[in-house]
Figure 1 (tube, rainbow, N blue to C red):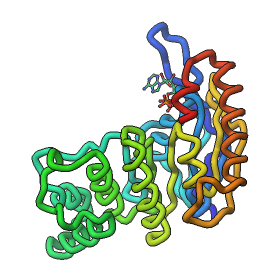
Figure 2: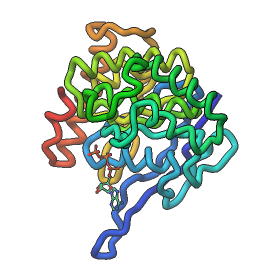
Figure 3: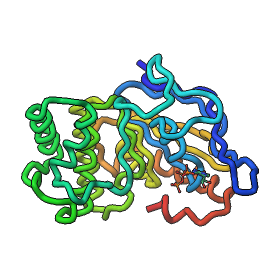
Length: 263
Ligand SMILES: Nc1ncnc2c1ncn2[C@@H]1O[C@H](COP(=O)(O)OP(=O)(O)OP(=O)(O)O)[C@@H](O)[C@H]1O
């Protein structure tokens, strides 16, 4: 069943010289329940802008996004964002950070604590519940951010380059954990990344964007079960196809973002 329906969506931003910058043009996309979908594309093609529109943080200029039969106009508990920087409250402990997400839900204190603890167990951080963010590694912080997002029990997890700032080993470990969480919780995940290999490894479907203005150029469905072997020839083939497409888009754009996506 379709969970999100993005229809004829356009987004412009007013520039300082009063001209309109056309960022997203004519986006039409349906996202299924429990789908893991990734957006990939050259820098500045509007991936984060689209994610922000899905989160209800900014409005579309025209067109609409429906969540089931509800028009998205504002943020809601049914959608939670995870950003590249974990953005934890440094003065709160790990469990207090996770509990913070539940405050808006008005849940009984004991129940909330248990929920937060269960969620920390799911990201293997139960033993760090009383630590402060500065005592954690980057990967651990990101796992707290994921726990804080999931504890609200949203329908959709919106992830904007969540592992972009992490080293390769930590990133691989978090891929593994995210896939397990996704399988256990059956959430829908919309994932923005620059990293083709990451997208190919994690996603059911990859949407490739072009830029100026941001638009969908192609999509790839990946039916290979998880966990995936990165040497799988089908995955390698898809990876190369996406790389070629992006090279073409980036050449058009004339920016030096090639290195960023090829690693
Ligand atoms: N609030 C804003 N006001 C004006 N312009 C904006 C605003 N937000 C984004 N933009 C512009 O919209 C374009 C798309 O930005 P966006 O961050 O969505 O791209 P992106 O594909 O996520 O880029 P990256 O991969 O580098 O993160 C850029 O040209 C950016 O400068």
